[in-house]
Image (tube, rainbow, N blue to C red; front, side, top):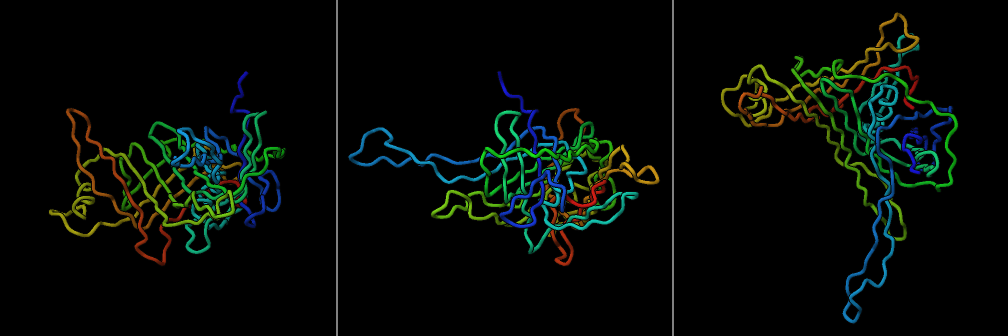
Length: 342
């Protein structure tokens, strides 16, 4: 008889201190959140160390040793607003919360410059009788968000962790599940320069470029998790009404008549909301929401690709840049019912 994956769970919670596991099921001082996961898991990545052939030896491999181990993996989920605040905080690094139960709580998340990303603890139960793993000192290396016009908002978070607890760990009994509603593409808008794009789909990616091979002599485990250059990119599929975006990308401006050497920069705003109201808010009508604001972005050059009687479409890449060092490259405002980011 096989083991069904749906019997497992994944809980995450930010740590107060590096090296100290934070139980996602504990209530104080901040309760974690348990995700409904479509697929994915953290796991150990290691290889057998096989010696090279030696003169005088046989044609067979004489032995092999286990190499150092790194823990990494991705969780693929339907994006829900209660847990989305933690995933974005983990990927960016700075948070601030304001609001009340009557108005809903707005969590403003911006990229960290010098403080680094938060350490996160992860509890992972693999089905109901396989193993329970508890990871300490994890960071979110990559974050992906996407939606089609006729689909759900989905996200993928890529974690890297320093340590894994023994597999005899006991699963948390108290589990705060993220039961906030799913979001669909009909409630998502992408605006460039203040005008809504005729988008059929969009995606957003945050990459912290954390090394997963920082091994040290005398240890089987990663030495540290250090973020390198941060990259924030978007992809949008549109059906254009004119050549303005193509001119912007290829020639350097929407009204350009010949190619220039300087890229055109403008703002991007992604607005996401739910059909459902946040419970207990008054008056009724306060929705779960998430707004991405990027002050300065550049559309990457792209070619026009007509084909037969197909409707003309562009797949455009938009890259966020920090043109003004005094302002964050991106600001995210997530509104939900949680009093703080888990």
